Image (cartoon, rainbow, N blue to C red; front, side, top):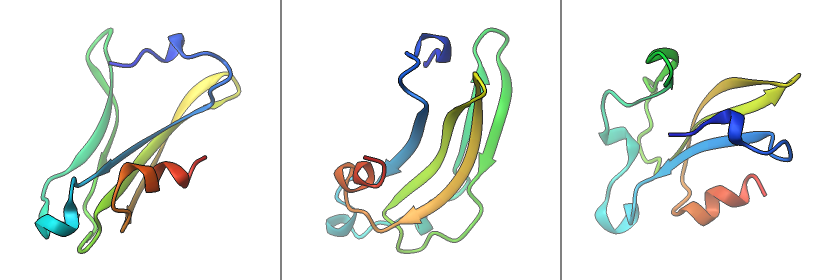
Length: 98
């Protein structure tokens, strides 16, 4: 669980990514996965604030950039991205943002 109020002001964006471990060796990709989604829930009242269903075809994509939470005028906002990539590991995904 992540409490946005506890995140220091110097951080203005959190990106949610995922990759398939050893995707090439295991011959796996996100086109094989069904019913994937990301959601953000307010833990105080268990209310679903955002939900993004991954309905596109992600055949041959080994990593996903689901979305990001970012600060805007002192408030946290959510941006659904849903971008598939061929990045083979988290190091490659992180380099997109560093």
